Amino acid sequence: MTSEHEALLENLTARDVLRVSPVIPVVVIDRVEDAVPLARALYAGGIGIIEMTLRSEAALGAIAAIAANVPEVVIGAGTVLTREDALRSVDAGSRFLVSPGSPRGLLDAARALPVPLLAGVSTATEAMTVAEGGSTEMKFFPAESSGGASALGALAGPLPHLTFCPTGGITPQNAAEYLALPNVVCVGGSWLTPRSLVQAGDWSAIEDLARSAKALSSA
Figure 1 (cartoon, rainbow, N blue to C red):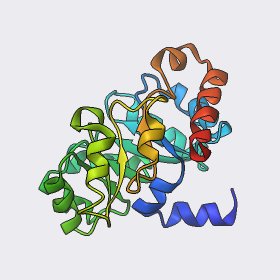
Figure 2: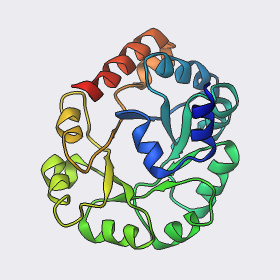
Figure 3: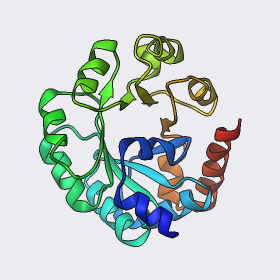
Figure 4: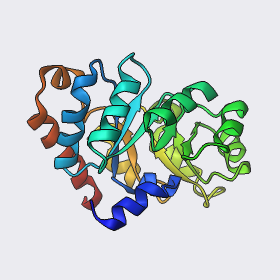
């Protein structure tokens, strides 16, 4: 790692998180032993960030393994629902947190944590509530079923100071439409790490998917 990258990891902000890659892989993992080769494959393909969702018993162990063995990858925890989820994720080594919604209790707890939270919103009111707490970067979720790129783009007019990572229904086919919006820096997607490839240990295929996703930044 370069000294600049080390400094980024040490002082990571929500804005930094959104700017690591045009696509944040949203990962569900079943075996801790898959975590390190998965992270290395994504990094080799140009994707230096992972949202490891807390949807499996292996998630926290996977976060810890990546934090310890692949420090060049910015590892975060997704599907953070409670203060306890957040604390356990930070203890495991998460550099950022992602929640599907924006309950007041979680927003309040996040202010005391040493890592940024990307809170989930799907309406202008929710986005304004998160912004009241000082956060200008957030997750737009579930993107496609909340009106898609047109709905998110409409928020740029009244809320030009807010930036979003849309997640939920994002595919290689529609990612570019979201990335073209003025209030979007990156998107979240699960297509980079399909469970079938992870379970098969097909790391070269995942590296290829990462490389294609990285190319979206210049599309």
